[in-house]
Image 1 (tube, rainbow over the protein chains, first blue to last red):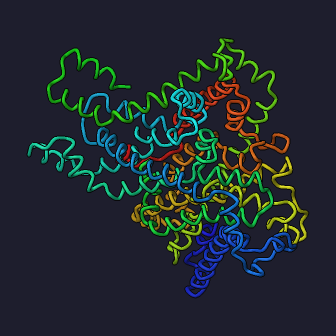
Image 2: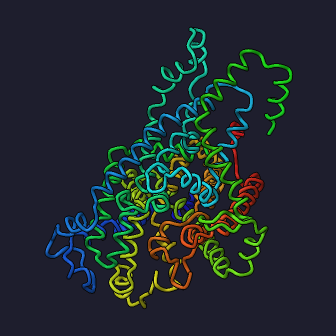
Image 3: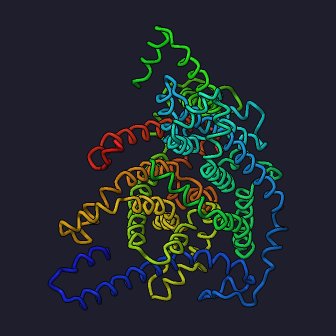
Length: 293
Length: 312
């Protein structure tokens, strides 16, 4: 929108006038971005503020922003209302299993797609890319029945074991990156008598570290956030992850917004911290997703 | 497709030892994925088609009933039409809106603004919040009695809304929640914008192009591959839209079925009513629909997606 007005800088206008317009336009851009930024931050602030309020203050109208009196009570209340640490342990087990398994399996598979020439490779890669476009409900029921027949319902296995077979999206990311590594590095190693596994381990993996970090991060996040998988496969509360544990908490204590928001904060905070610790990896990962698409 | 005959012909002629060796090691490297795609993708797609022709309650064995499930979706399940309608409503309003916001904000951020990373972080953060947490939070923010949004409406003298408890406003409420997470596609657009070569703008300026002309004739065409990518992913995403609607309505899809989306209809039939056959038929129709839609988008993309010579 503001770019449109910028077009008005015709040579007929004096220098000062043009400068004045530029300043105004810059001002408008910053104003728009800042207002929008505040708007998008409000939900976070409200989450935090609610989690620190005493129960009586929640239902005051008009709503008050500053907790009065400021109280931590909602946090211990949330921790005792649900077995938070048991949910946390289950979530961490599933998430970390997926991180390790995805990094290993996807980096191997991507190597097969990017660094070795073999007949049929491009066709199978096309299959891999097209599986990205299959909505989950399509495969949901038979997959559920497979796990049921294996006796894996109410165990974390349906949420962990598939990671051993890789993930199409991560394989795609890694393959795109592997393709940019000069072929000469591989052929030189082959002349020296190195096998494919050796080239994978000694040449490609060290170079791919940044992208492997992206895969690890995304694998962790998607499992930490996953709701549907645990909803379908876990019905025993001892097996619950944070996502469905929180959902159970919500359905049982509908309007205890203080403890609910405290629990939500405890689930969101690690992700935010993770983001700030790995910001570059994060943005690079999202960017990788799009650009080569 | 072109590679299949190559493969067959190669075998007949006898592959050279090197090609053979490469084929074996290639297949070995991809074998984890290959076994996974057979077990968790190809088999389920085929199996869900065969389940879709049966009546199956998980306890007694599936009983063949032909196309009855498909017929009854259209003739005796009013929720089917409602779920299709809800899903289209969401897709047709949410997708264009979120793309518009994402592209606009990315264009603003691309104007050499100072503090770019701060703004980028502010807009990006909501998109990494777990859906369960954002759904809980927004359920509270949109609470009809004590919610923040209605308090704001009241303060500026506008009538308050029922949001998630009003069938007319529940979907707009969900769209609002979805828009909070526009940041991840915005980051993709921003990266694509920063990738556009400066020379293109310089050339346009030499031809006397103003900012608007440059945006319209340089920036947007260069951005079309990214828009295309986000459109395809976005469409597939909205057709599996589930978690937020499920959480804010406690799994009911209410009020009055107004937030029963297609994926939720499948989930409810499969895991609440244990109508696995019917749910499979619903899933297969979704599969066919998304397949055709994606095919159409890819076929028509040549008309509006601009690829640089070297990429083609």
